[in-house]
Image (cartoon, rainbow, N blue to C red; front, side, top):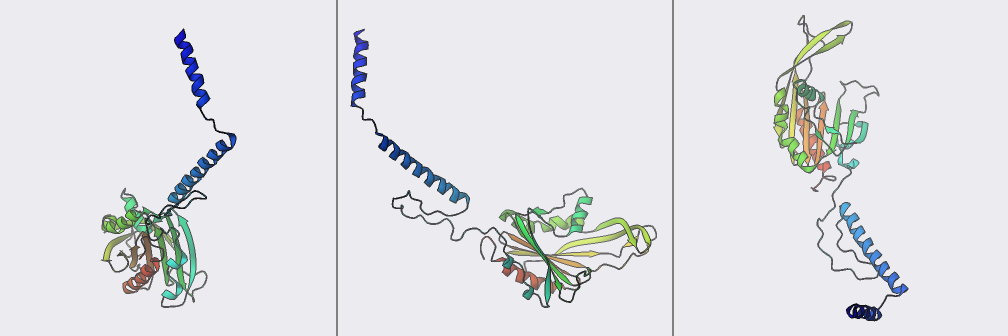
Length: 285
């Protein structure tokens, strides 16, 4: 029993020797903890925003020595209008018919090429983008309801995950291989005549490396459509179409010049487009 009394006496003596914080000291410690939480939260927000924070100090204290920034320039995200071709880049006076932006759009090289692949049970092969901008140029002389026969330049500019942008060009030969020779079959109506028509299509990558960090020229040719039953020609024979695909950093642009532009015209325009893309590419040119 005496041992229990000794224990109680020691506890009471120790408690008397403890210094308890006053209300002001408790509030001061709480303020210091709150400041540390703000500093930590600020650093997390800056990291998520892609900002290189060299030093973050609590209010009223000197900052610690600055650390080297992880990157000299922050990553670009938005595709600005100056990254697109400008009307002055074209050899003739033009107007912008359409200019729009999108999120998560697929990088579509040629809609009919996608149809060729899916008709064979394959995916269309289009890579997903993060965001994009698109525009169409038409000659100033063209009327508002210009037909497809009017000369025009179309440009789609996409930002992709960097590895996806690189892969798109590296695997383009595999993408078009199943459509080296493909017969399309479908209904048609020309004037009063209707029926089922057929035509042969060919796609091939005919040139590479002429612009930017990588480029490819995709050529599509098609045969004269004919009526599947009679073999009679339907409409006019289509001309070849070329599409330029250019990469600069994590950007991909898809350019087409129809219907009278030559491959040389398209390559020259692709070189100009690549220089324009530098203002928005990651990494910077």
